[in-house]
Image (cartoon, rainbow, N blue to C red; front, side, top):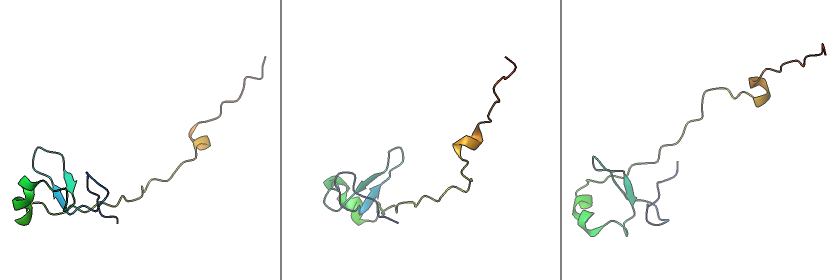
Length: 76
């Protein structure tokens, strides 16, 4: 499972700011805004780990099996 990346650069995220009413934002140590530093030091922004997507349990159906073939009208 890959670590989430910082939303401002390509480094691994260290904090996830997910306050109520806002979209979650991932920050590395360098990009965390100064006004959030005190809250981060207090543990308000634990890193939210990336969720690994599970493969679908549904069986894949080939496209040709989905549509029924209609025989051509041969009476003409």
